[in-house]
Length: 166
Image 1 (cartoon, rainbow, N blue to C red):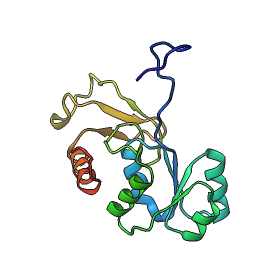
Image 2 (image 1 turned 45 degrees about the vertical axis):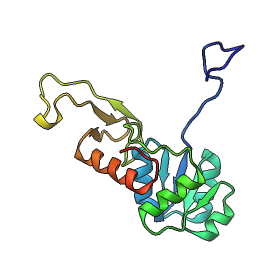
Image 3 (image 1 turned 90 degrees about the vertical axis):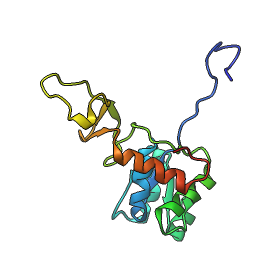
Image 4 (image 1 turned 90 degrees about the horizontal axis):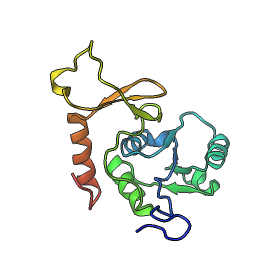
């Protein structure tokens, strides 16, 4: 569907993944959300007041297992699941628009943007990576590529969240 009128041929709406702030109880969830392209800040050791303020200032949805903290934060999702699969299912149930496919968009370590890395003619790729695009984090430089870990993540997502393609 495309917009008509002022912007012929262009979409008149923008669909973006929600932006999250995960508290220290949800580190693994934060990494998985980054793997599917969600802008997810992860904070550890922060006082509740600072977490509430940052979520509000940055327009992020707080993800937490802390009932009191969730009650104090206007945009919060309380996740009661103890393990990662339950947390992902609860989050997708609360926000069906959460992506479920691996996307090389966010760094799983620091949440920075991933950018394609041009091939280095002086440094041939390892045979298992030949022909595979490589991405690097613009913030920390960590490199990513399609590999067995990516396949494992896809398989986990498909098993944990109904309707997710492997």
